[in-house]
Length: 389
Length: 141
Ligand SMILES: [Zn+2]
Image 1 (cartoon, rainbow over the protein chains, first blue to last red):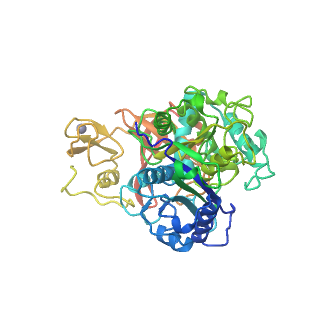
Image 2 (image 1 turned 90 degrees about the horizontal axis):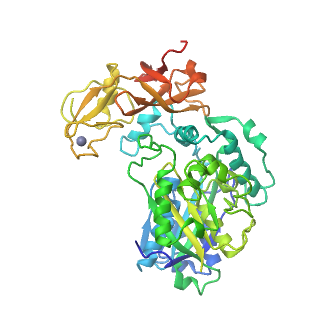
Image 3 (image 1 turned 90 degrees about the vertical axis):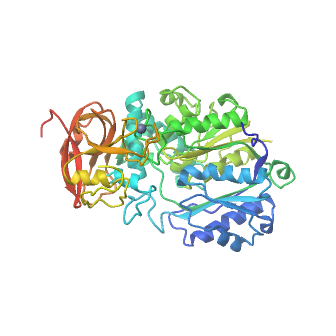
């Protein structure tokens, strides 16, 4: 196993506000978040020599660099698969820094996915007939054209196999909105919901209801990756990158893994977990809390199982009785998750993990040692374990 | 039919290429096709130029029965899609031949959809594209 674990750290985080209409360009959001992250770390923009985003972000590295006044860029890359790639961006940055290719590498994601285009709308139009799109169209011609619809098929089978119900989905939706209700940055700030609210919300892609879904969001988040050694002497308490993965197990497809044994969004998360625990030399018992990617909150159930916090089919029981609350065994998505805070392709879950390690989160968990963070499931995914120094 | 060279029926399906043309062309002739590997004989779906089991690029398109049972399903409510009734049911079917195939379910049967139920194929056109959907067998029509 790679000895990457522990060699690098997240030394700075930055973000814009999260909204439905930012009123400025995506590039402006990007440079604001990147600059804020550098200021947070106490690093001059001129020191930046690496920039990483992930596909679906539209901001080219050299324009971000020109805007912030970066130095000479020695490393730039974009892991693929949108929200599956967020933690993968941190992996790329950590690899570059650990290898000595980059000294200060910033990972960013900045989009106007609500005000500039409608990110959650059906995929279609004049798509080029490449392997990127031929398979999606092959399924889309039957009316499966949104992320919700694609993932609904896997989750319906999951419900059939595990006995999970929409009441279990409601429990997750309520937990995340509860954290969001006390997070001023969140869409659901001051707006907790009840199980009844969830069950009364309209159907989007059965079995997903409106309150199972994240919302298209405008906003940006950036994180600064440096060596663990350098991080010691910077402004903030470092979040050490104990492990990072990119994870596309055999049989994985992009949103359409309908042809493998288990069609739930599970295999990719389970593979990521195996990689992460091996690199960090940890087990689930070493993990204090989790920020699990929730494009659709119900997918947290198979993710919890894939991450090894409970056995297959037991997540619906695991989440009951306060286990995922702030004082529970595994506080979960303490920023409100993407369904409660905003849909920033999981980059906001990474930033929340950094705040928790620093002890500065609005919903601060006691005695945080290590945090597992996942990126989008049902697509080729990625993950992180961040820990205190 | 093979991967290269032979003449294929024209089709109107968008975003197709040499890997997928045989499938959509088959639907123009009301045939549900899948690739059978020329090396090891395994059926595969969705289309792919190479067999992941034996590495052969040689394949032939074979006609499938279109009969099977529902492995999973979803019902699309939002947003409305051009050419579809809303809500629109979609089923993932385990075909008799042992491979899975995704397709719409006849919309009037939406409330009866369930995992394990038997289905058969119906050929349709939607938005001027030759397609198919599944229908529950033994249900009121
Ligand atoms: Zn073969």
